[in-house]
Image: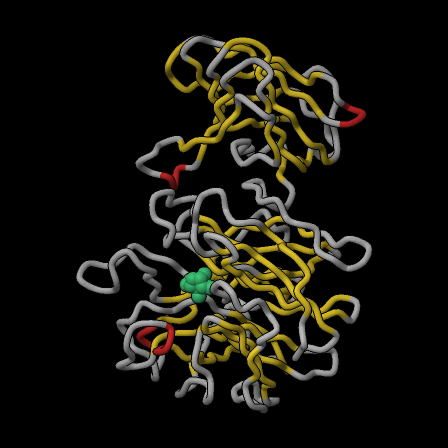
Amino acid sequence: MDQFTADPTARVFNGKVYVFPSHDIVQPDGEGRAEWFNMADYHVFSSENLTDWTDHGKILDQKDVPWADSKAYSMWAPDAISKNGKFYLYFPTRLKEAGDGEKGFSIGVAVANRPEGPYKPQPNHIEGVEGIDPNVFIDKDGQAYLYWSRGKIYGAKLKDNMLELDSKAKTFNEIPQKGHIEGPFVFERNSTYYMTYPHVANNTERLEYSIADNPMGPFTHQGVIMDESASGTWTNHHSVVNYDDQWYLFYHDNDLSPDFDKNRSIRADSLFFVENGNIKKVIPTKRGVGITSSTSEIQIDRYSEKGNYGAEAVFLDRLDPFQGWKVVLNKPDAWIRYNRIDFGSKKSKNVKIRARSLTGGTVALKLTGENAKKLAEINIQKGGNWDVFSVPIKFDITAVQDLIVQLQSGEGVEVDWIQFDK
Ligand code: FUB
């Protein structure tokens, strides 16, 4: 919520999730390229609980890459992987004096002793690679593979030093050829190799996958992981990671830049497999992943699901999206559900709600499932200003619960956050 991020690769290192995204910026004055991606550097982020994230700051800048055009602002989608105690950051950028288009791109490696860096770029890019969107997969036998794209997907073995190709590049021609394809991400589960990628089958990129019994294919097209974004954002770019026995899809959309889809924001949602190993389509949510403490300001505008009518999330301030959203409950019965709130073991006494309504209304809070009784009813008094309303809750709640927030009566109630106290 404090910068634009895109193309997230999530990896588990030392028991934590590290996310290596691209870093979109607004075009700097007199530099970069108008109406296009502008990306000068990379940051890395980490989290143990997928709720609280640390930004470890800048780990690589275009001006420090010896072989790159230091003014290209083309530090596109990266990947990172660990081998033999070292951490390798793979990144595409434009070669010195390259022309426009993907042709001028190659892929480089920067090496560190810790996931947080500092990363030292190699003097040259990887010989024999023209393209973008590097992805590295290390198989169970220790063999590493590099995949990348340039309209199609390519792949080759990597040498043990992780810095050079160890085979001729192969073009994966069996992956659908009609419509632009980029951003390969390969992972293995139960001896099946999943080649996942953004593909423009219709208007914008959707996430698809193919499978094989070998990291070098041939791959068979299997299905769609995520449909085209409703926002119209042209790109999507993703990674798949298993953390604490749960699979997650990291991807991006244009949440903080609704009018310009080249200033993107990363997201994550849980991913599930069906019994035959196929991937269940992931429905994007702003709720995302992780557990939210009941005593924090619960941003219910980032809900897991909403009812069919009368509830929407809109910016608190359209001119400053970084302030986040509010939920507007327009009509009686309009509702949203926010999943996985941790109420702990000590009972909550009161609930606070930051809200406002021009005409006034009553908001009901309910739990789901067997506990689906009314937890509280909060009367939001008529008035144009934000206020914090507090009421006692009607019964004891503990443990992790999903919460429903529903307009019981009245119209046009706006809610910023909800917080329980002990
Ligand atoms: O972020 C720049 C480019 O947009 C990436 O390299 C592509 O995968 C797409 O997300």
